[in-house]
Structures are given as C-alpha cells and as structure tokens.
Length: 365
Ligand code: PLP
Image (spheres, helix red, strand yellow):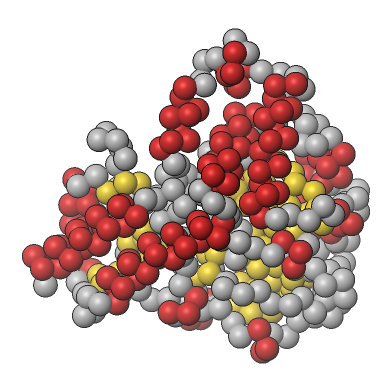
C-alpha cells in the first residue's frame, strides 16, 4: 500500500482495495466523460443503469448465480433484512428455525419474533459462541418456513464451512453472509436467500445485497412497508426509489476487481493463506495468545484472540497503532483483540501483524 495508508483490521466498515479507491478517485468528478460524478447522476439515466447492470452481471459471474435468482441492491443494512425476511416469507403464525452461532444470529432471531414464530433449534451461547453444531443432531421443525443461519459470525469469529440441509417442507435455507460475502465460492442454489451488508468485503456501508430465489418473492405480509417488499424491488430492478447510487458503483468496482483477480477460487486461496499465517502465530505462541474458537470452524475473515496476560491488551493495541496497524480492539461485548482480514487486507498486512505479535511477545513474555 502507499506510504500514507494504514493496515486497517476493522470489522466494518472495513479496508477496501487501494486500486479500487484510486479508480474511483480518478472518476470522481467526471465519470467517463459524462461531465459529472456518479453521485450527481439520475438513477434512471442510461449511465447509472449501465453501472448497476454491470455490477449485477459481475456479481452473477463471481458467484455463478443461477437465472432463477434475483439480485437486489437495497438499503438499511443487514439489520433491515432481519425483519424483511420473515415479513416476506411468513404469516404471523408461521414457525421458522434459527441456528444461533453468535450475536448476529441472535439479533436476527429476536427481530423475527415480531413477525412470525421463530424457534432457536441450536444455540452456542452456553459455550460462548465458539462452535458450529453437528448437522446430524439438529432438530429441525418440518413445518418451519425456513432455516436461518449466520454464515460467519463477525464478532465471535465462527464460520460455517459447510451448510445444513434444510429439512423444512419447502427446503429453504437462508444465510446472513455479511462478513464472508464474496470471500470464497458458494453454491447459491443451496439457498433460498443470501444477504449481506456491503461494508466488509465488497463496498461502503449503505448498500445491502439480497440474492433471492424468484419463487420466494411476492408473498409479503400486508403490513410490509414498501421499502421492505422484495416484489417491489425485484419488479423495479432495485430502482423503485432512489438507491444508494454511489455505494452500488463502488460495489461494482470491487466486483470487477474480484473478477480480474481470477474470481472467488483465487480469492479464497489468498484468504486461506492469510488466515493460516495468523492462526498459526496464535497457536504457536505457547499460550501467550489464544483463540477460543474450535479449530475446524475458525473464520477466514474475523480472527478474535486474547492475551494470556490480559493487562497487556491495551499496550498491544497502542503499539500496533503506532506501527500503522489499526482497529485491532475486540468487540465491546467480548473484549480481547480481533483482526479482521477481509479480501482487501493484503498478505503483507497479516505478515506485518504476525511479525509484530512475535516481537511483542518476546518483549513481554
Ligand atoms: N450480520 C452480520 C454478520 C454483521 O457482521 C453485521 C454488521 O456488522 C450485521 C449483520 C449488521 O449489519 P448492518 O450494520 O449492515 O445492519
């Protein structure tokens, strides 16, 4: 990265590829001879329509999205989807299943309680959200309208490496992929809905991406606000009202960049390498650093860790910041440290962090 950039380990909004930011800067005041910025364009004009269509098409290429799925660019963050999903798929008396592997899955479950009858069929809370359940042991409700998971728990660093087969009558699996979206290939056809806030792997906050099987669209409860109704957005190609135009443009630049990098198979390889280096440093520290998450389900994106001497945590964060490695403080609900190493975190950033951690240990062991 250029001299004046830091390595930003924030969980979101998160670091973006520098070449993408530079491209956006070069087009900032005059997008491709249009004489204006993307921020100033009509969302119904041909220029912006070409931008959103290209973004969708590159995302479809990246994730190999089947044609019977709609791609929606919405607002309100993943949090809004916690309500939109039950509102669009359920009647108030319908039951639905939630697997809760961390704080985000828990929030999704709690919001659904307002609009239908959700059941937590498995919770990792008593084990401090360090595990993913064995799928064989799950007691799914055959009458449930859907099974909901959070594919990667951003705060606890727990990631599904495979997905449970939904045993509900319509076979619908729904995943919050906010913090591992586009970090690896995914078989979209296994899901009824995949949704993600953009601000970790693919763009700025303000854009929420929903990939939904088309037959699930069109059954919203009567009380559903227009802005939460998938049918309205699908029929209008995400242009029912003024969308977050600039954010969608930025997501489009990131998708193009990921395609140019060779697609998600290549992206996953790089992410695995980065995660391996960091987890190995933690596990190889003789207990000085510790990651509480069960090894087989550790996240490739968010790496939480603690110090055996917890009184040194503030010092570690302070020294790292001085070395231009920022935002390493763990979430306020769990403490410790957390290094988020999304797609745009270069290998050099992880290598620098690991070198620093070893040096810190040698000075404080
Ligand atoms: N789900 C996950 C996994 C998250 O990491 C986050 C945010 O950090 C959210 C949902 C909430 O997203 P938003 O802030 O876009 O509403």
